[in-house]
Image (tube, rainbow, N blue to C red; front, side, top):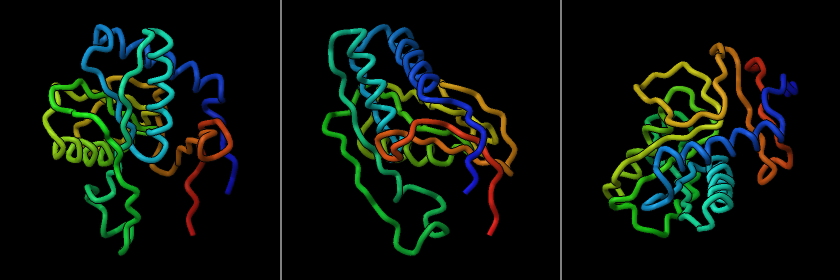
Length: 181
């Protein structure tokens, strides 16, 4: 696969996550009742990094959860006859909490819609906010992020690739043309 043009390198990703962490603290007036939930897979790593930054700023841990939205997708039957469910790991109560939902790329909004359904099935939070590293546009649903690392206008013939050290041994965001088989 073609390498693509680098939009964010490791330094730029770190800078964007630092800014998002500060914005989360500012908008929520601190960490009281605040929890962070990352959408599998890369959203989990971004969520943990943001939580680590918030701990550096505030001196306290905040709960971090992992959300698998596989069974909530509206395109589940199109993806696979046997979907791979990795499972969610949310070891804290979400009732009356301020949830910051984290994902790597916001595109059509369907992943976020599935995540919202999954969270609501677990309880009724006080509020849910959305943070994404990349917002590429082309929404099919009325979903807007509260925190954005970088807005990247794209065409539907382009693809955004987020690579993180934790799962890709590389740290960058690239854009490239979609390949057709």
